[in-house]
Image 1: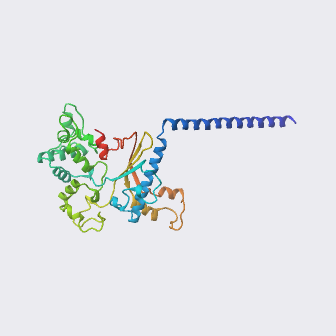
Image 2 (image 1 turned 135 degrees about the vertical axis):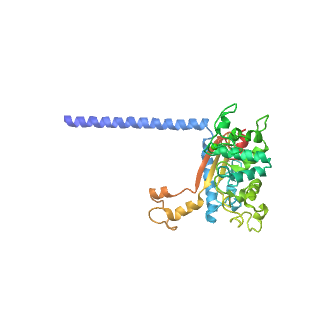
Image 3 (image 1 turned 180 degrees about the vertical axis):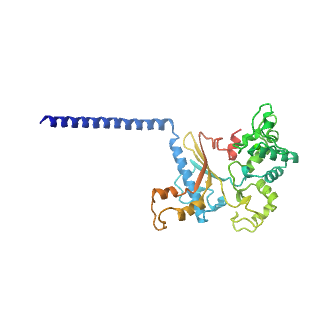
Length: 358
Ligand SMILES: [Ca+2]
């Protein structure tokens, strides 16, 4: 063995030693990771529940999509078959004592941030508020939301709010939470108990009739009575006549005497809430979802770049094509909670949220 061969040999040994060393550290790292996972599993027993809850959420959305595809991507009412996904044929196996799924159509509410003066006043009138209060509430609310500082006749803007005991500015933008109503001229006195400060019956009626998130026309199929009566005031239809002569319990087309400006017969906003109850710490995930079923269906059919896809040829598609596929739902808000609280207060559009935030 010459000098050069000796050098090669020692390099080889050094390389082998490094490989052994790296393997040793890699094994230690793996063991450490497994130990960490075991540790987390020990102290966070809800970890599995969370994964399951998201799995069931995804499955519930798949049910909505499947039902909608039968009806050309249109969803109108839970009676179509999406109201109780756990009972849907082919739903993933589950223990009914451990999982519950609730789907609420929130597009039956009036879209607060697209309501004009006439519609706001019609709602306050349906709530049987006095004439002067109706004007004050609608003007103040519109002033609070609109970007300018020009006060309406019965409204209030930053100049009024700055002169109060605790000065603040008008939001001049969308309302983030119903709790914000306390700050708006007229609402504090009308919607909240003057002694306790707790929200009263008018607050409940208002918050059940409007949505802070939706900007779309109201789905007549899921609209509560007060919303139908408010729309009827503007549009001049008879609320009972909406449901006359239908083959289904819900409408699939707008009646001729109702314009599409304010009303619709399709769901545009859903809240899907999954609760997992296993062991001591139930887990809840709640998603505010905007269906994009029709556009997603069209995208899959025609808008993909590259070659056209025929139904008989299932394939994964290129990265470009995958990026162009639209998920049939847009998740607007997502909130989770451990420990039995059905929905945390951050998801501010459901009845439960509002009851819990006070
Ligand atoms: Ca303003």
